[in-house]
Length: 231
Image 1 (cartoon, rainbow, N blue to C red):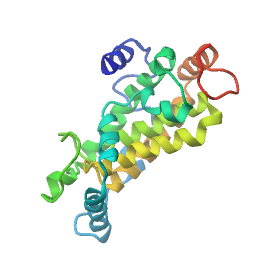
Image 2: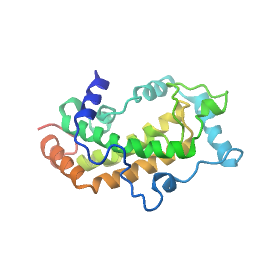
Image 3: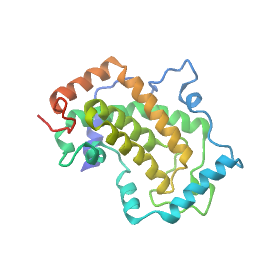
Image 4: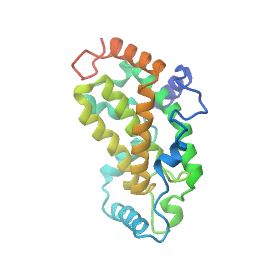
């Protein structure tokens, strides 16, 4: 039901920018140039990247695996705990639509970088890696979940400024959980988090997105409370 609702909001939300265009400025080379390449194979940085994945694999707990599994399809519901006890995502349809809109804007940015660098997933590159989440066929760099986690957290922080730190921590955790699950390297996550922050800046400077944000704030969020209680 949650996935169906999010897909519906994604389809109905008005476009902030063209669906096939990354909102980041292209004058400096676009998102691939912004992030630069991942650590090259055989480098100490690449070895450290893999070492962290294998260490997380040895030490991850059932609770961490379950949390990572619950984050496969990100939505407002994944940030409920950071928005205060008792927060109900279903009472914030405009906010859900705003996040769906942000996810749609981020998709071409993420895809551009993945295709530019074509990094293999940890479990493809090394047989020792046993992922605890779905094996995806897309490239590894950058992490799309880390990108959306950082992006969603930044947008929600504009609506609930009193919960900013908790939201940013939650957004970062979503990316880190991808390493715990063995489906991304730490450098994938770091790149995704940077990309998400840059996309958030671009969207928050877009007039149409600003108007949708203001509407969601006025209709669904209590001024100054930051707890996200619906009016």
